[in-house]
Figure 1 (cartoon, rainbow, N blue to C red):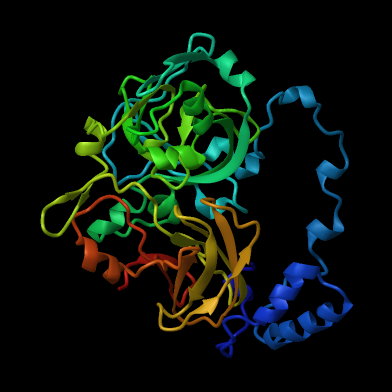
Figure 2 (cartoon, rainbow, N blue to C red; figure 1 turned 60 degrees about the horizontal axis):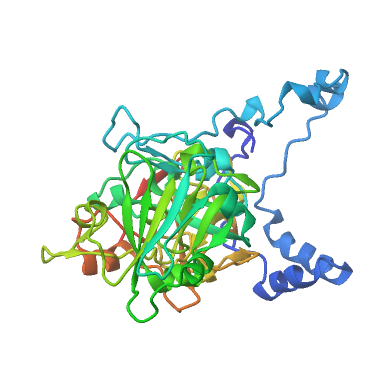
Length: 446
């Protein structure tokens, strides 16, 4: 993007929201861009050529004419950074605390910078964090996992024991039940990092819960629930539906190809795909099989939904289908008119992403976005949408439909069912307003 000083004078003619035909996009994804498809693609792009501003190739650009210093010197040896670090030019891509949450000596939440990420995997160092009494360093040689309750053979595992068992590796998203919670109260926090940043996705590796319970001989007639307990100072305990645990839950020790980070539960955490993050108990030390929910402190006083009639909805842990545009998004600025690739993330706790649609006029009209593969169950899915901005105000939205047929609701639709006094499980459509000067703001529409 170039500066506004280089912007062409006058208002540009309106351009189509998407200038790639859907059938053409499917063909490109399926077979690559061969000669015939390349010709079609060039024709499709020509429709936007008159309105898109070409990149600057100034003849006197010193970064073109002069060989930079890094091309004339030796590089650094590998021993300088035995564990790789990001470029210093990416120093602002960091987790941040929200100004809207209660601050304590043990800061409880760190938000992922979704606006700066690509693809579907969150780097381990940028994974969002939620702690109930700070994170802890645990000696893996002293850590133990107990399996008890309605089982024939209560068991205790060391980390060495678990690492010997058969393992699986799967990519899943992890979202806090309070993600987007500030929006319930008509509070428009400024950036997507603060609205949706309690969301990340990783490849997790570990032992299937089903294998451990089978080995322990769980009571198939009476068992209905599983209690997960953490080893941190908060004594976090959560009731898990046994069917969900047996389906795809993992006792994980690995994340993105390495051992878990301490703040993400090292050496052991529970992974319950599709279920709110508080149930992914970190520093996991016990799994107890039972026949009814436990009603622990963190599932009776917290993570419940206050309904319009004053009742509390409990054990509503499934994260419903949701999406958000990450760029352009709040706090960013479009520096010139022309083409932009609108990009974002979609996910569902009940299956896979079937389709994503994008609107540039606040939901009056919708067009299909390109869903970038792979589309995995209960994982983040990247979507892209071609848009030519004509310099006028726009209202950017996305909505997802998942494999069950469920479509992400508007804020009014969600409020009609849930009211405005809740904190948790807000999956309403997010709106970003692009002002005439290119500044992008968080606004709330119906």
